Amino acid sequence: MSRANVFITEFEYDDRDPPGYQSGVARVGECVGGEALAVKLYEVPAGQSLCPYHYEFEEEWLLLLDGELDLRVPNREDKLAKGDLVRFAPGPEGAHKLTNHGDVTARLLMFSSAREPAVAVYPDSDKIGVWPGNDDDKVMLRRADGHVEYYDGET
Image: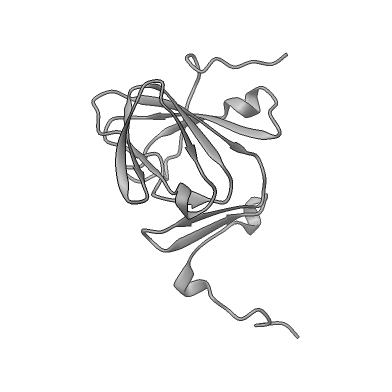
């Protein structure tokens, strides 16, 4: 049996994350051998957001373990407190953004399917990201720039 402790873990930070989006991740699901679910532990320092406003085409769940977060969803914002459990539906109705406007670092678990390919849509910037399962083929593009006809470039 493999296990991870969500209260005692090391977080990875990506140096490429811009100010306002500097949060840490611990892939606790991978640590215990998870395959069907992606379980990630995040820490979001004060003044930071986890990701830009987005939605995916899979169900996601959030459990806030510590701190407080402001949650933006379609047509409203809510405050989340320690212990809150939230489900994000697949598609546009599940769009969300998490921001820590508090004074202490927030910690949360996110659960989703571990399927790839994965697609995320970013309505504020009109972008789509596609992760097919290998880094060489992943792409992030603006919808307006990405439209081509189905047979464009084919013989």
